[in-house]
Image (cartoon, rainbow, N blue to C red; front, top):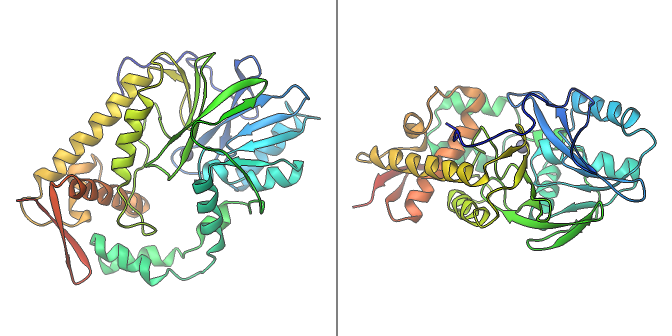
Length: 345
Ligand SMILES: [Zn+2]
């Protein structure tokens, strides 16, 4: 449940397909349509003094998103040039058309180093067959033969299909940097847990935070343990990032990656923090007997977990179990490749 203290200054006024809504002078909001339950990702555009445009987040490399871009470039942005592309993080809905846009307008790409490297790394892995390490990871989480077979049928290299090839070089942005966008100062504020080095952008003077997926108003961002770093503690990083963002002013207008612009950053961060801590408690409570990641879905999620969300649910479950382990509240035992977690004595 989101806190009732959130307000949505734009109310029902959301951008229609191909339409821009002015958030502040020189700063525009639009929505890139995409398939899947989220339906669209928010894009933000900043007018530059030379007539150029800075683009923040792009949508995935899919037909419907491409068509929306074509309509925007032929419509409200006709005659304008994209002079800079910034991606908050590595996920396809944010970075998918960055390469395409950069090539089309000879624009530089700005990202944090870890996010850029992750995209380049994942896009370079074009194997069709699911690698054995991935299968071992699924098995470790408790997947049965049918679940492994079903996921294996979908193949492996989906990432490269929904992310257009990035340019060979990029411009690194890092935590604390100040970027001049549209003649104004924007500070880079890095968070972690949903992705390794997620960039938010803060215009402190006007009180505006472009938040990407680091803070969403109505849904909880996916925080997953993944095969690329099985000993990581993404939920610990996520909780630390919540504490870090709480240092920002409470009255910011937050422009999220999905959902509507809102005010109420602090109550939203508090709600996210509470939600994860309650879920940690709920998982710990069922560890009186050894459990695998798949045994914890009932303690974590309200709805049953079908094949379409099994991967994400598994990653979330593992992230919570790993956090309990790091906090000394649970121990993990590897029995023939399956991870069993028990409450710490
Ligand atoms: Zn997203």
